[in-house]
Length: 328
Image 1 (tube, rainbow, N blue to C red):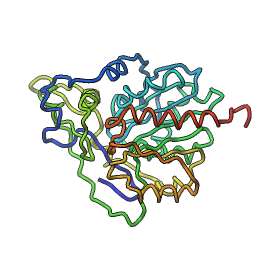
Image 2 (cartoon, helix red, strand yellow; image 1 turned 30 degrees about the horizontal axis):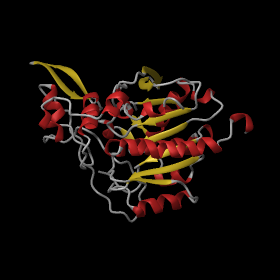
Image 3 (cartoon, rainbow, N blue to C red; image 1 turned 90 degrees about the horizontal axis):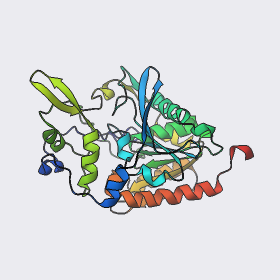
C-alpha cells in the first residue's frame, strides 16, 4: 500500500483467502431492480491503439452530446462503471475506458503515467469528444484519479474539468506504509472458486455484494492449463515492476489547468480531512469537495446512487457555467 504523494495500489483479486462472495458458491447475489436495469443498458465496445497497445473502451451514447469519460482504479476495468454510466447517457457522450495492462486492454512491456494519460486523450479523440462545442469532463477513481491529475496538468486546456474520486494526494508528514508485494496470478479450477477469492483492496466492508460479484466476473478470464481450463485475473501482475511514476502528484495537482472537483467516501481511511485540506491548499482555490456518506474508498460500489446524484449536481453546475468553444 502506498501513501504520501505516490500511487494508491488498490489491485483487486490479490488476496488468496476467501472473500465475501465465497458464500454464494458462484451464484449471483440478489440485486435491486435499478441495478438489473442499469447493467442491461446497451453499449458499444471498441478499441483504440496507443503506442502499439489496444485500449478498450465502452460507449453508451452519441458523440453529438458533451463528452464524459469515466476512468477506473488500479487493477480494475471499464465495467466498474456499467451500473453508473447509464444514468448519464441521456445528457452526455458517456464512455468508460480500460487502461493498458488491465481488463480487456493489451498488456505492455513497460508502463508509465504519461502513457496512461495519452490513453485517456486517445479515447476522448476516438469517441469524438473534442469535436463537440463543449469540452469533455473526466471522472476518475483512485489510481485513475492520479492519472487524471496528470492529464489535467498536461492537457487541461482541452478539458472542461476533472472529478477526482478518492485519490489521496497526501501531505508530506502523513505516515508511509509499505507496499504489498504483487504475486503472480493463481489459476483457479472453476469460476465459483475464483469469485470466492475476489476481495477489495484496500480492505473495507461492502454490503453491495451484487456490485462486487458483477465486477469480479468481468475481472476474470478463462485460461488453458495442463489439466483443462481454469480462471485467473485479467490485469498484468507485473505492472508495478515495470512502471515509471513520473512527476509527483502534489506538483501536478498545483498545475491543474481546468476546473476540478474532489470526491471522497466519507468513511474512506485514505481521504481524511487533513488530506482534503492539503489538496485544497495545493490547488490554491476553492473547489467542490464532496463527501459521500456511508461510503469507503470504493465509493461507486458502496453508495452508487448517492454517487450518481452528487456527480449529476456537479456536472449540472459546470454545464450551466461552461463557455462554448465558439466563445473562447
